[in-house]
Image 1 (tube, rainbow, N blue to C red):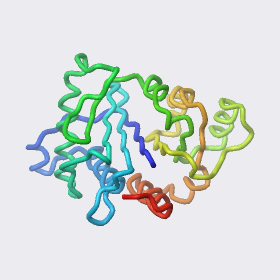
Image 2: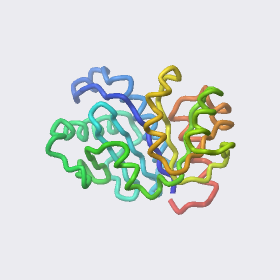
Image 3: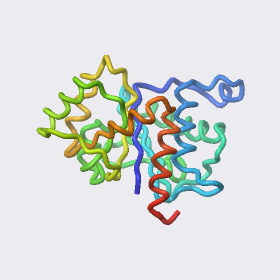
Image 4: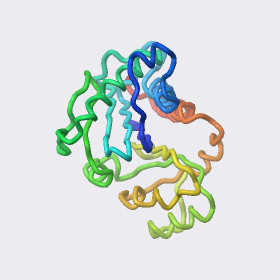
Length: 216
């Protein structure tokens, strides 16, 4: 069961009125494209997929759970409205428990949690694949961090992570990597699809898992 995680710095406030006027924030449009490619297989939902968005500044985690997901359409409008509803709940983040998810709509949940605590409590994170184009010096730092001499290239983990990062700020993302038990940098694959949108990378990965004949 593939799980996708996207880490983003922040998501600006927006409303239904903004959507109607065509003023949906760019990052929201990008996330909606990712949602579409993560879940939609023709006219069906991939029930075996989970999709996470972690918002750094607010320490808010939003989970889209395929097996219970409802009301999510293949169009950007329905996706952005459902995301906006979940984000509205994050305005009350001080009252959101870090111990459990709160349901926004069926299949969409929200929780305030520090990233390292989230990682620690996720069994599927014990082996995580990261798709990014790391520079050679950065790969060396990662190998030292994990006391390894090689980076695996197989898509053999249940969690696929996309770090939306600026390579010049690599050190800011090291704390995320330090939270992981085992890391699988898909460097070869990253170079192969590095010019693709994040949503297209998700589509590529999903096609791989579709070939494994998961029951959708």
